[in-house]
Image (cartoon, rainbow, N blue to C red; front, side, top):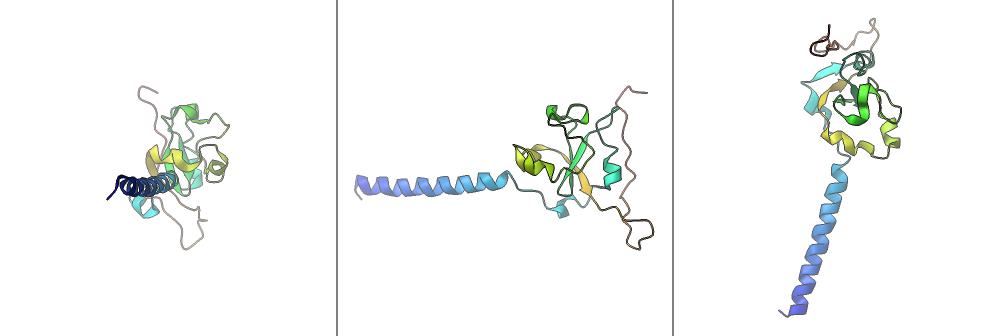
Length: 142
């Protein structure tokens, strides 16, 4: 095989490899864990999620696409408020679509549960959370 033929083969190989790597990287930024993965985690109604607003020593949680993430330790979520005016304790599925970073920031956040629909008490199919969720006080706080 001549040197030119070897260069062409390597060129095609590198082009294909680069294309596959780019597709994988683009998909990785938006991939959400399947809900089935989180079946053993806590379930939150929107009312329960609202308690986790990052205020008064409470953790800061946000929901996106029915997955609840802990943003307590994220600088951009200091005291439960995002620098862009968003507040923890809410479902931000629509707002994240308008953000400059999109959903790719979620892949590094701890998943703490699932957002479940609130069903009226008179409904025969009421959802019961796996455990009662209460905001925790910070260590040393009275």
